[in-house]
Image 1 (cartoon, protein in one colour):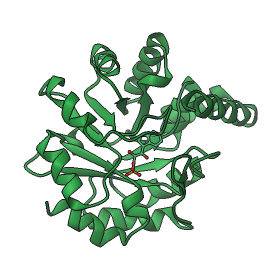
Image 2 (spheres, protein in one colour; image 1 turned 180 degrees about the horizontal axis):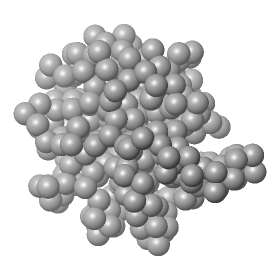
Image 3 (tube, protein in one colour; image 1 turned 45 degrees about the horizontal axis):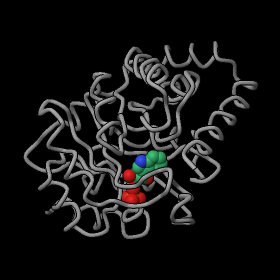
Image 4 (cartoon, protein in one colour; image 1 turned 45 degrees about the vertical axis):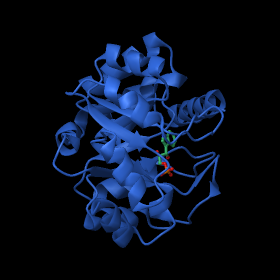
Length: 256
Ligand SMILES: O=P(O)(O)OC[C@@H](O)[C@@H](O)c1c[nH]c2ccccc12
């Protein structure tokens, strides 16, 4: 499934590249105003921080929410106290787009993450051209050489990279890369199975100076409290926010 999602996203990027060349997207990326310092915005604090996600659907959960106005949702997230916004830009299964990201960027002052299945430099340039401040790289989807190449490019463009892992081995690869912002996804993107205790098992092996993000599977405030207890600096939350009142749900998650 992860391979299929990554291949599909690469194919879609190739189609966009026929309309807008790599040289053009690269020039747009370099001309964009500087990225916000997402690492600073997400760094360790006395309370947990939240990356709130704009997500219409997912292959594991199906349809979640219509979200006709992603910018309005992001504005609610900002109001509710989110520290950054994640925008799913994958179109096939998550029903997102770069237009969603551009709309969100235009509305909020928070750092914005391009959440997609990135395997090509073109997609990294696109993210920056759309004024994303962060990109996601999924270790399980990339060989070491590609991972290092895309990480270096994202860094060169001034962005922060959220490096996503789902095992001890993947975590080692993320740390070897020099990642400063590391995610542990409770969901296995190959089988879609949830392991809500994975973060707590891996977190003790992550150095102190690395910002730790617990991803997925938050339904109630107690889930946020458990991730925090296990050492999360940041929790990334999608479904619970798009299927409930965003402001009050965020407030309840931040009150733990
Ligand atoms: O909706 P949830 O369970 O709160 O999860 C959010 C986020 O962690 C999830 O959307 C996600 C984590 N890693 C990803 C990689 C690709 C697509 C989606 C994801």
